[in-house]
Length: 377
Image 1 (cartoon, one colour):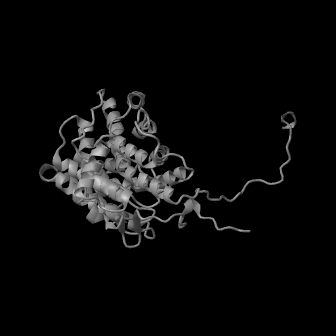
Image 2 (cartoon, rainbow, N blue to C red; image 1 turned 180 degrees about the vertical axis):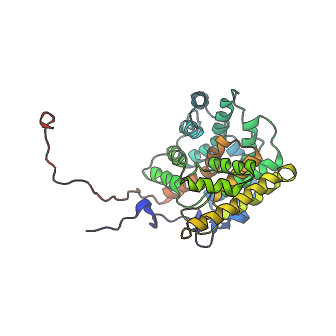
Image 3 (cartoon, one colour; image 1 turned 90 degrees about the vertical axis):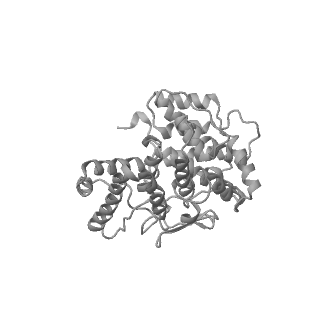
């Protein structure tokens, strides 16, 4: 019997979720019932994490207790830090270091394996590991996490060892909230697939980090920043982008598998980034906007049937540069935010679990006859 082939599972619905809804035609994103443009700039990361895990916003007392609990989980085992440091010393990628580090998140814990406990451990430890890698590349010791700071502010503290700037912390928090969940993207589907085997949540998050590493998923903000900075330094955005296209390269930061219009998250991050580029920095921000405008026009000119508009990665690069996150931590910082969605999907999968097991179509040979090795030519 012939079966329809859906390459990349495109258009195939495999799960029901309350976590996010994407309207690619109209450019809308709903996260746990809230439009992303309302949720991301107003909520704390802890509120969003609670919302995803519990399907409601916390009361003041619940939020205080939840924040305290999450902060208490930030420290990681010495062995995990040593692994991250070795990865940095060997020049390995930050996402490789994060994958190795998060796999060790269960070392030294004081509780039995439990999906909700594992979920909070993974989310809490992600910034500690990412920042430890960054400092190791600079020959510095890791900074101890602080329990008196919110999740985003603590991450900035871990990166610099200094008291975080309030505006930068809010900007980073908006970013983390903006990327917290986005349907069954590759890394989220990976997490759900792993946990559907009744494996543990930390293993699922480790697999998700591996999926996010790929340049077709979470690896594009760095190249986007390179492109914007070149356009700014040369003062010729159109020439820079035309050269990229003439060489057969993709314009990173444009186009999305789902959206047929501008990614709604781009607007949220553009608004969040604007305040970091006032005064002397305004020229860079205007260069970014001009690069976006030119990119959209050139892509419409050369690929008129594809609707390649700005995606989340374009203003991710601009905002993270503004708040002081180094380029090599763009993808790990994406993981810091997306870990909330990964873990929420794991918990949701386990509520009514069925092993994820799609089929494949065999296109190989038939009716082969075995030949002993000494008789093969």
